[in-house]
Image (cartoon, rainbow over all chains, first blue to last red; front, side, top):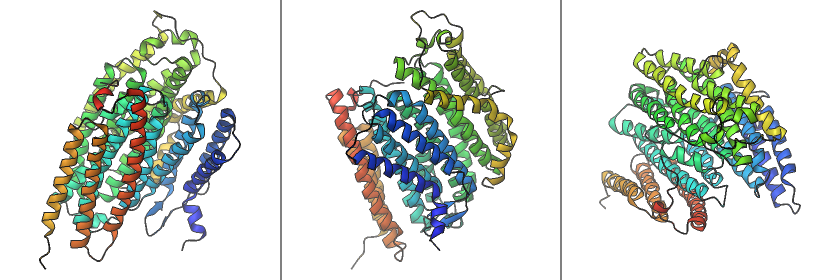
Length: 472
Length: 104
């Protein structure tokens, strides 16, 4: 029963593949195009790709259950598409002068393709292939400031830790295969008995996932890679790459590892508490905006783990909803850092003193994004965190929720430190001059600003996600 | 013919896994670190092939998984070595101690 069904079910992957091949053909062709025309084309294609995701979402499986899709998976892919589009628009100022724009997009979209396959996987082999397709090109992307020392260092750290984490993951998968004899997601739950070898396999698998979503104690690469890599790539890593890993993690835990829920609940509890605490405490002492955002994204991963540990339909719904909000708010913060870094080269918190006087629009985008990340009520991040903690409390584990709430207080301190530097502190040096932005980054930042402000007030977004998310 | 028992093979692969992990954590040369990662991946390959042959001889999933792991390990090594070459150009060294600007 392949035929036309294939084109409908794998629609998003096919559109993306077309874009990648088109870019490759343009690259190998004899004509050379200016960076601005390439960027216009790519951004238009990404917009088409994003909109095409909304056409006729279908449920179904392909390739002997290797690939599955449904409305939830389609929505998750749309969220990732949106993130990529915004990242691409915000990276305009940096890419405009870069020598290898087309290669950048080919690699970037290949990783997105890998994430799509990872989310759609119905078999651990497919999942592993998607994971590697999503992480190997990202290491090359981290090295995209070719002449910068820090960029190479970041790329090396990323590829070694991702290779190590996939090694752990694979060892877990091999033990799972040894104990069950199957790698199909649909067969596995019935075969999982919770024996010691399977618990060991589960721990290794969770360690592999924790690397990807940068949960403590597997978070050490995060801050270094985010700081060394170009800001556009850091934004992509922190939002799209992490989002995809979280989606698969939820899918894996809720559907495949469901018989071992008691085992992974304990692991998630410990990881979640450690991730929130260590992420927030390290964020407090950072001087660089990129590192601050890196540790803040580690702390956000901790909140996500709290939501996942809720192990209910609300748990999976709140995670997807939170990622949607997190995409918009984190990209707002990273977007401002990205244009500031591309146009003035400044990346430390002290450099942002007096930023409001010279760049009021950028300051507001950054401030609203930080309010949202901190979870201050009018911004959407509050609602996202509220649902996460609500799902986490659903299991009756109030200790976890109290720890999470205390962590939000610590987080206020360092987010507001940046806001204070921008709005209230008098610049002790020359403040960042007024930046002249192209309309691409302006639209990208505008979407983030509007999204973070308004998304929380549209209750039916959450209700819709809840109605289609994975029951437990 | 006396077959080698499965436990021996699993012991070998587990030893290889932890050798790779030890090498990754202690070696300071980037190429050697990469080799250690390959050891980890190869221990997984041994696991898959052994489980496939001893426990599920009618399936091919384990063997196929191995083929994919080998291919992806090659891709990973290619990208990693390209990164190391680029790093050597800026640092004049492939010692991890010399690439330590990003900290804490």
